[in-house]
Length: 408
Image (cartoon, rainbow, N blue to C red; front, side, top):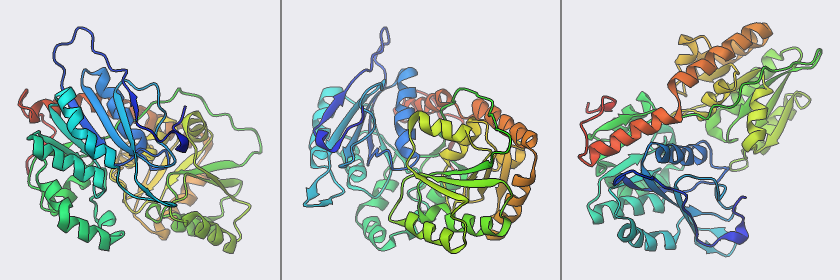
């Protein structure tokens, strides 16, 4: 069941239980939103909390709810509390007054050991930082790429104002920051954060393996699946596809439209006379998403910036080779020979698209299998949760500093 606009009442789901476990860590997590159209973090944050529950961490995840609702309201192993965002006529305001009001009551009820703040810039994130300071609780900050150079320059006037008012202080007062890649850690340092940074990659769901069936004569499929947003580099993909025009291939673009960018892309596709070769699907979720991955012969993410690039990992987990740019931290594609990690820009993408589409099916499938092995070995949610638990234990003085925490 999905939370619909008519359901914008506080919901409370608690399926957490730790039989036989003595005094588990109790963590208050705050996310600025978990809309299904909100990108990889809307999947990664609940998945992390499910995995934390499995390794014995008791978490309460608090989030605002927009009119489109939130994540599915059942099946979680952790406690999820959602509060409706404020509205003004047809406009939705970016804060949830009830969330702020209930943080103190939650803390009195649960006796949290620490606060984990997921995201930046929005009122819910500031509420989390302020609440941790008021209660003298350790604060862990996962910015999820929202403090990257690209994000700082996007809507930069509003962010300059927020940086001066609260965001700089919220960053600098974190007991520890979490980065999912070395580049994200470097950017946090460049913003002046001198505290410990835990380098913990996101986990990835591993779908059931299915050998792809390719009917004779059917076109091969290249897939893009992410937010349709200027950050993702899709105009470069259209230009490269126009230059290569790979024979017997089609391009599928799936994902939610962000700010009307899809209309601009469709206009560009029409100008290039590529309408017969491009299909725009809109948002795809759940099993339909995994079926779409497995139907693809090649995955392409020509992104300007990703702190991790969850869709790259999901494509690899589905056995699909990937083309992505240096905008995503995926050098493993070249190291493990499971895809192509290339410079940003049309020239490199054009050259690589030609090579990838001219390779044999067997070559691409072998690359996909190597990619799946890589994800299984390196990016399991259990390993991510165990590392996060070790970080929590350290910032609450229950354990020594883990080896993945950087002080430099």
